[in-house]
Length: 211
Image (cartoon, rainbow, N blue to C red):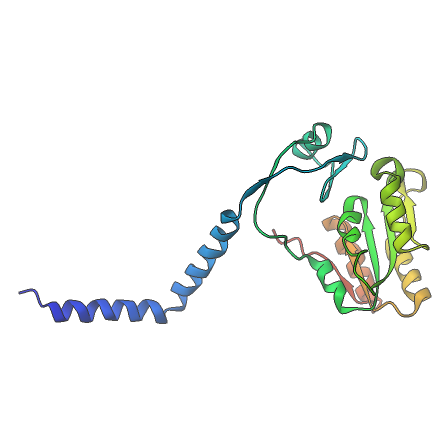
């Protein structure tokens, strides 16, 4: 014979079980985190500026790294889909310090440019890239030099690849009041520079490349 009260007690027990089960809440939070960015999907009309055959800019700088980025550079789109809110990368930590040293290679200068508008934050910039003026344009160079009149810009096409660890150490020691070093490069160079600086007692921050 069906007992309504037993059924209600069973339903109550199941609800209580789910509410107290950490796995349930972890699954719920994970699902919401995955779905939420897609709910803010929207189409935008970017204003593109072709810097060279290697790079294009609207709100970001895209460097040629494969078929998709090459297509974007050669034929800048009139619309783009964007998903979610802007994410805060490792450079967001720069706000914790008064003066920093930014070490970047190639299009790694792009996220560094976003720091240049933070009031009160002092910079030293070490940037290594092939043909910087031809690749990224005069305006980008001017913005870098405006933020750091003594910026060290190495043209790897004519000078070869510099010893970033040695040059970063030299700038760090010359300034005396740099509180942190931020490294923005590819995974291999980032790991080398971070290890080299840490081994010498200099505090570096860098992406972790865990995706």
